[in-house]
Length: 243
Image (cartoon, rainbow, N blue to C red; front, side):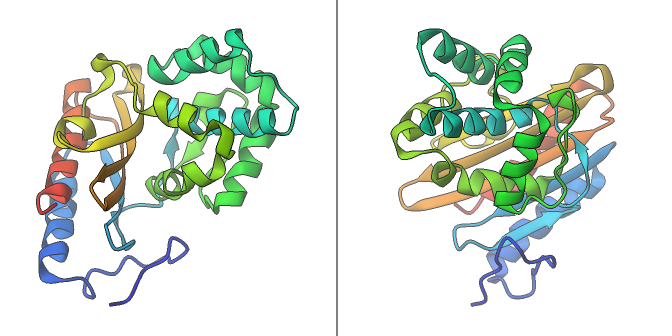
């Protein structure tokens, strides 16, 4: 079986087992049927990449906060930034509650856009471009699965457990979309949204036993906020049905 690396541009369905191909095709057809703009990228349990418009660029909204967290912890490991109680409080709030003021604080301290662009190059996030205001950074579904697939390795060993605790500790009110479709899985994730334009995104690593999956769903111009969240959940359910 051919393994499709994250650097492969083409998304190959013909090489997959019939069941996996059917699930990916079902998710793609569902995405095509939804109003607004929809993309997804999915790394299955064999490390193969599936997707629908995976390289389409969107404003990242709060998805980029996971990158800010990793960049901050890398700088802590170099001795360039502290991780005292007040810093932990800011990072905790930025991730678990998606607090924007905490993100502003952390973004300033890591050196803003150039630091995130350098991190993106390290992970081969081809569509990513940081912005002066972090939420306007450009990204794609493929970028996000590339980053989350490598997130644990990007975080220095001394801080991995801390980073994962935050990404697994998102408050209940923000556990829509993929978490609703993935009950019974251990999930590390981050969501992002702009309610003013009905933009809703989510990216997650899902683990159960020896199975590990990575999924990102990005949407924009939804008819409503609830519709966008439902699109993310619907794609996730179709991709997870056989696991």
